[in-house]
Picture (tube, rainbow, N blue to C red):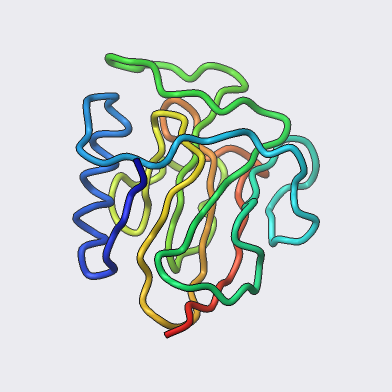
Length: 165
């Protein structure tokens, strides 16, 4: 099942997804099932200085797209994994999940990713979604978080897309 969000309702959906995805409770709508990316794109702004990184598989940086925009994410040097069920008190080494921010920048390493707009959490380990965006330019930021939703060094990537009317 794919998520279809409206820009006006993005904040409400992001909050609902954050609570549902991060708590591993049942959710009414969830991101599409993912498949690991085999070839990462060459170009995309990244804070990575080597080692583990996240990247957008789709869309390409600078692409002109139509809404809903299909977003697909990849990772290298780490493993995408659902957040464990129950109360999580520590992070598993090398295990992360995706977070997408709209029209926002990468957060500093070691920062807890807010469970509110503009961030959408993928705590079940999903790696793609469809998102409604209004026409115009948008910055999309992909950030990896550990089981505690804390950003990881070098694991943020930002692209810009132009949504056609």
